[in-house]
Length: 186
Image (spheres, rainbow, N blue to C red):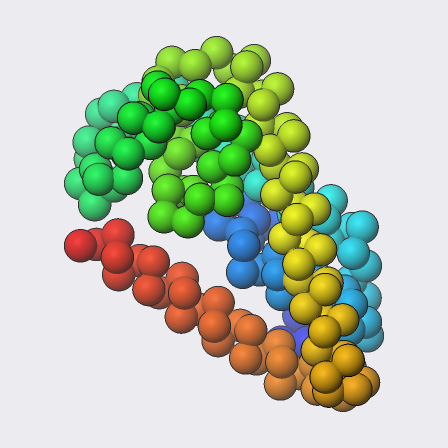
């Protein structure tokens, strides 16, 4: 089974899982593929899957931070510089941080843990996480979709190139994921 068939068969589920764990790259790829057509992905469902994945993931990580707290964070020394930054930002700008942490490269993954460890009310996080996740899913889904539109204008019928473009985007995504892991280890 090739990559295109996997996306065609499991695209929304893969998108949900990918955005549950991380997000930006897989959502951009899914938005692009929704524009290219041919693999069965439609932009409204791409955005919905991404929203549900990121919302559920952040709620889960919030509760891990809430129940495991500082001890959970202290067991991850490669997160210390990021968690210190998030705690500082959270104390100064709580509302914008909760609404917009998904858009801040480098702290996106640790922020829900930190917010949970900060003892913020679960109801307040839920209420603020909802629009933040929705804005993020719509924004990145549309950026990927627009990238597909631009690619089609430049290359013509993108569907004939979608396999190559998909491989290139997946390669970039894997590289960025690998690179972020390398930076976290330092």
